[in-house]
Image 1 (cartoon, rainbow over the protein chains, first blue to last red):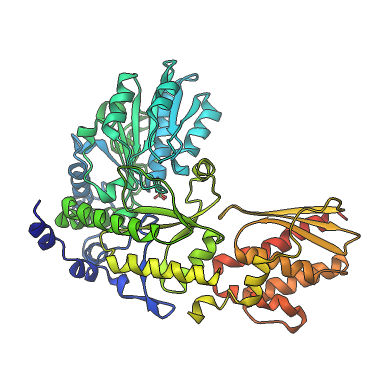
Image 2: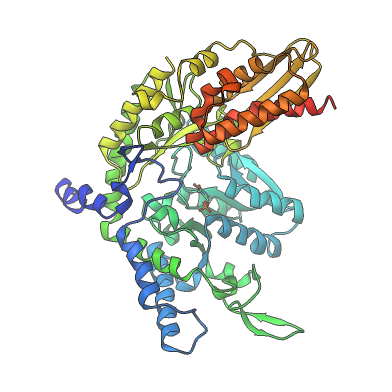
Length: 414
Length: 137
Ligand SMILES: Cc1ncc(COP(=O)(O)O)c(C=O)c1O
């Protein structure tokens, strides 16, 4: 893509005006939101789609024979098509709606984990997982007798393939569950290579796409992912809607997660039979309005296009890495070759919470703490970090504001 | 600049940078600890010399360390019941943001009331001390 094209398709001022909240002030200061990695702000298109649905087209789905229910079901199901296309799933039936990435992983652990994995099988995760991709496997280990192994990362914050080889050596590993992009280090994992690696070892691969799906075009078929999960709320969509992608043959073999309405073919007191995927995994009334909101978020992101988004975020990240590394006493965690707009850092003599509070006073929102990745904090030798994360609406000026803000923090602690 | 530093006023920064009650004493009578799982802050509080000396071992933010320091100043010579009373007054003060003349230097922390997520940083040392005193009962 040429530079001219790039600027034409990416008008940052216009984009920012799509997000009503960005014109808010905090403590009387311009609101600088650098916490999109925790949850992204919502464009007008998403807000309107949800409101519009509630105002003009709403009823329960898959149930009513009346006009309103049929229209609502159509709108809901259209988002399944859209989501399938968004990540290039081979079919719409491979898209299961959940509440969030966390629920998607728990669903896999409960169903695939209990029915397909056998006691004695092993699961491998990496040292840079979010708690959402650790705890469900620990619970499965304790209830089902599978083994949980942790592959190392290198000091630069990248997947250590030598460690992976070692973890897979005895042939017991049946599942590799790993993040597509670290929510602490910003590292992108080499997912195609990891999928090849897992498959060569007769294991399936689950990718936690919570962070990655926001910044890059994801093609689950090109990656050859067996499972791929993400949340709507980090993708400029609403909370309460998440996605589980799984290859059709895997979903077919998986028993239900929750029982209730919508997930059955037939029910009698003696026995019920399960609906086909994806409905088998969607018990009860789903998050209808939120799903419609997710559809609008996907449309929004696709209208801008990932080439433009990625180029903008690449420039932001390069700029941020440059200005932050100029601040004496500031340490950026990780130095992966392939990294995106997630930057965690520490400052000598200043606790991450103090950094966050002092930045907040200047209107700048960053996250501080362990970022739901306590084991990774241990691996990095820190207890908490501050973290700035970027979205498609983040500007260079906001990065400069962060740098200026951090210099003030330094003054307070000087 | 001033508004960024309100909470981080001289007394707090001074006690954070130059703590007077930090470190585990060789001998102590009671011990309590506090954890904030949200941020990984951790404190151990030691009561020594029949309650006349309180020390802390802290890993955490400026607010927590300053609070531990000011607490150690404030509880010298108090009975366990008086400590409880002071703790309740302190918690009320940091929640409301209204300084309480009876609390003296502890009022330096009244500014945390504006930062809901930081109130726990200020109260954690007091919870740890309460745990230590529980051990005495
Ligand atoms: C890498 C990663 N995985 C999983 C999650 C969990 O997402 P959610 O809380 O939406 O389920 C997050 C969000 O913080 C994340 O960054």
